[in-house]
Image (cartoon, rainbow, N blue to C red; front, side, top):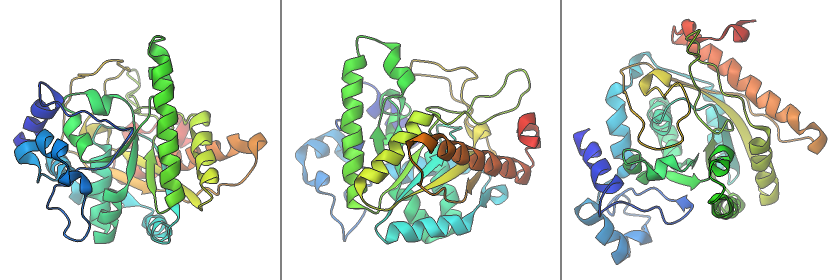
Amino acid sequence: MLTTLSYGLKYGLGKDKFIFENVRHMALRGADFNDTVIDSRYEEDSLKEKLGPDVTTDFYAAGCEFFRPSMDLKHSVVLGQDNLKKAREQIDAGENVIFLANHQSEADPQVVSCLFETVGKEMGELAAHVTYVAGHKVTTDALAVPFSMGRNLLCIHSKKHIDADPETKPAKSRQNVTAMNSMLKGLKEGGMAIWVAPSGGRDRRNVESGKIPIAPFDQKTVDMFRLMGNKSKVPTHFYPMAMVSYDLCPPPDFVEAGVGEQRNVRFTPIGIAICDEVPNVGGAEKRHLFTDKAEEECIAGYTDLLKGLKMDEYIPEEYSS
């Protein structure tokens, strides 16, 4: 754990700060990670110089090991394992899978990994294969950087972040176009797994009631991923994914534009529900029905998780009706 924090100081600050040069980042698993598939980046002097003695470090594993001791895995829950198995089979067949998830904690990628591993080795391998759609904070916040170094990422600015600064809006918009093109390339190759939070951010606690509702799915975001799936000409499947991880690393009650937010990590059970696939059918005039269905499935899975984890106090009243 202290080693991972030291990576934050080294690669998140100062002269050795790690720069994410491309909108699509592939996880740094270490020069010696795989004897059968050679990562050509580790043959480049530039990466060797960047990482120095850490060139053999598996940053994916380091991130998981940092958060794992705070996860009460014995009392955690994974629902929809049949759907997860189906998604894995689709990916193995060269088709694409996009998980439309709610987002509760900075540790959500590690939550996915650690919980998928409890299902079986193959699911653990699937978790390592997933590409996460991420905002600017995960590549610029000092403490977030080492965890992001170990993840497959597509760096996309949220609409709120783009609109926050008119001067940088054109550059951020161009970066998003580049990210979309990179994602489309991956989808065309097939066998891609993507995790995205269509809300554009983490779920926030209602400070008055103490309930934690799921942040609404953004229609345009869902439309964009459906469009990319269709343009790829490769079968692309959509699974809502409900997540309960709020208590592990709670976000601030209100959205903060900058980086460097305060973190608190707590020992707690966590949960994931892989909901039924939502068929990618219907034209533009009915596109809202797809988004509504995906969000409804996510809410249903979220409610089931909270009940299974005995966290009923977090269930919003409107979910119980």
